Length: 101
Image (cartoon, rainbow, N blue to C red; front, top):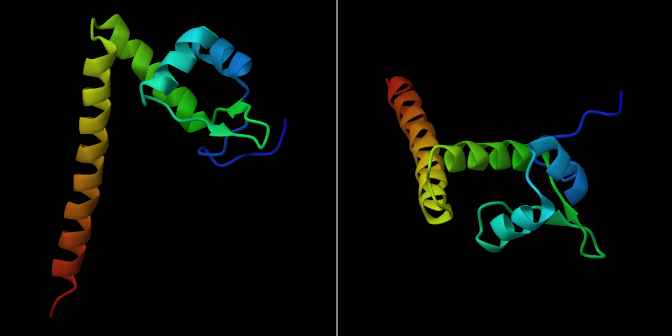
């Protein structure tokens, strides 16, 4: 096995990401154009997808299969991220309150 990479490090080329997700490269480029996924770029401009990107693409395919269009998926992904952020904020506030004398 190769080295373990952080889940946000872009290591997969577009063809590998397509194979891992079952999504063709043209659709991956379309998802990027719509802001649904943001792979890193090498100095030469080659897309590099991370494990986090692959998971996000799999979430997109699940939502597509559920009947959502790409605009709806963008909204769902935004709301999921916002919910996650707010849960973190609530936890921080609770921790701060619990540490007060």
